[in-house]
Length: 240
Image 1 (cartoon, helix red, strand yellow):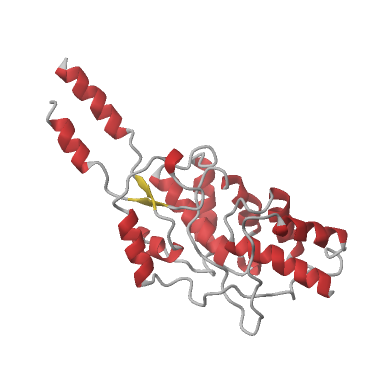
Image 2 (cartoon, rainbow, N blue to C red; image 1 turned 135 degrees about the vertical axis):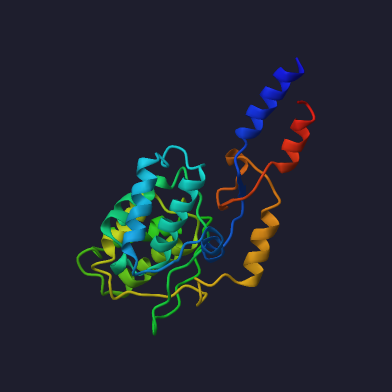
């Protein structure tokens, strides 16, 4: 009887995810997971996307491989200038929105550009601005103040808010508008996005002590591989 209970508990611990909620900076996760955010390294971006597809991470993004490859793809997609991101990344990125959870990073600043407006991530203003872009013909001519302001609003929501703030149509439509609106550039708040700051690393370490399942993970959080279950395994060994 006790051996059967031991086997049951062993199976239980083997199925506990080795990931925790960390809602943390991509820079700190890149440091911990040994990858570099480099906008010139398109090969690494494409390799990560391919691995995400072959590992079926759009269905279940819980393995360490899925989590790391999503961080690699997402951090480059969200940080690097659009012109340097492979089209395959632009086309495939949002396939993983529902299964994978992002880390925090903003777009790389462009020298001389004005600051982006502060987005409201709780309302529909980003989607409304996208509708205005379409209705105003900004896909053909994006030079007007109306197009500029609407584009900045969508851009700010895209770069700053959780990925589910904008509709799929607005997310994908923004990328289509980046060509006609190429001269409409604004900068997010922080300058340095690829250096792990001390306060972010402390936050990552604090979250590393908290165990959670994927169902318990907040939508705006991020996962971080950790060594988990040592104490529980010790408890299980008592049943052997």
